[in-house]
Length: 384
Image (cartoon, rainbow, N blue to C red):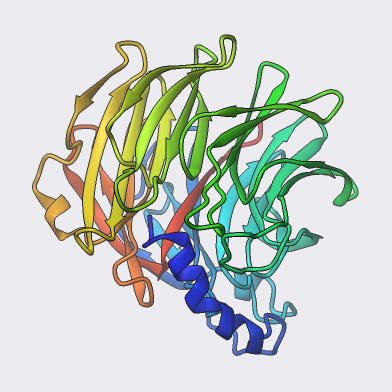
């Protein structure tokens, strides 16, 4: 992860107060790079999009694309597909998903979700949600977490966040459910929506709860205490939830928790820091850059957790030594068919980052420049 969210946000408040996300800008052409041999036979997964966050206040979120059939990785594709959109994607790309034939990019500080055609990336419309964070889907609705209030670091921050319910046909918000403070990732499983409340703007008074929302009534039933400053929440094949905590960047370190929704108990705690994770089969691939104010340094790690054994089975899934060149591991995604592992490096957060492709054995296959702060993936393929 970046240095604590509160630090990045605080530094950006002055910038945001004087910078518009809707001013005219130069449209830069896409940048294609031939990174690997074309696949003679490629599967239903034809490639992926990569959303680059861009540093807060810089209005530099961009969208890249990789195509297996050509072996070409193309940077910054949104502007050419949408030459009439001012300032292109906007400020801080926070999440990316494909649902049906549409691609949804959550643009946090521009207070919107860009909705695009998943094949052409041509804009279909946008959904206005303040300080939006993450998105999930169920049936004909999208569910989006929102911090609701402005970017403002204050221990007595009083604005609770919410989950917005969006009709995917009309792109209109049809309902809201109030949750805890500064809600981040959400997961939908077993007829419930589980929301990781962070309280990230309220340092040192972080939240420590997971909100439980009934999917049918869209009412928050309860909040369950898990750990400080929650961030990620993902379901596994057994219906359990894997929830990460950022900690407080002092004595309470980032950790991973296995939470059983049926018993509402933590089944196991892992002393494993988490910035990003991806669950494929029974494996959780994790990368982390965990900041400590005690050491004033980042701890850079990666690991694999086996969800069946409930154990960490690998301390480093990169086996060729190239992990030493990764400064800030920021995103991870695994192709569920080829088992290739994609890892992003945010570098110094203000210049273009890197994307690395690894074989299932942890050997680097190729490496390419991305936009600033590469983070979020969405695989695309043939319609079924």
